[in-house]
Length: 205
View 1 (tube, rainbow, N blue to C red):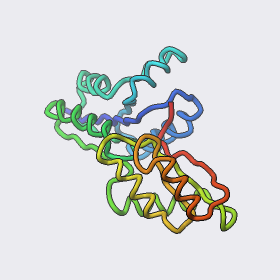
View 2 (cartoon, one colour):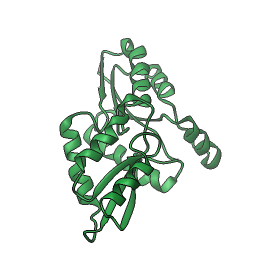
View 3 (spheres, helix red, strand yellow):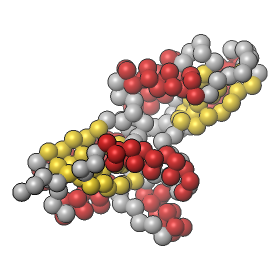
View 4 (tube, helix red, strand yellow):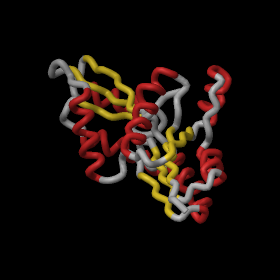
């Protein structure tokens, strides 16, 4: 019997159609191009986002559990899973648990890691952040804000903040450390008069 491969791309999701097209769908297309022999499946981890898209656009998007069930029912023997989450936080670990529960249904299972996993990942992201938005003068700065997490991987944001030190770039987190007040204090201490605010999210609601 010929081997059949399913490629499952998992992201938080977004209710903004244009944002979805420019970020999530653009990334999915790149994966499709890299794995032309695999059949593509999509899943979002945010049930709120899934519900709002269904209500507002009439589009049904699977949760990872639902997508995996469809893949198994269709008889695929090879499973490729790639998370588009930034860090190995709560939702990524939930995805791993869901894949582990069904791994025995496949001959081969491969799960890709989130963006920030190795030290080299951090180095590449820091270089990108420094280049993507540049302060225009010595008393200006760029404050990046990530989502944050209650998971122990919240330290990813503090690590990025530290690695950006001295470059007029800062990294905060909305729901964990370093929070906005901490970063405002740092900006004042460093004599910053003006700061651009830039989101660092894979997607948004």
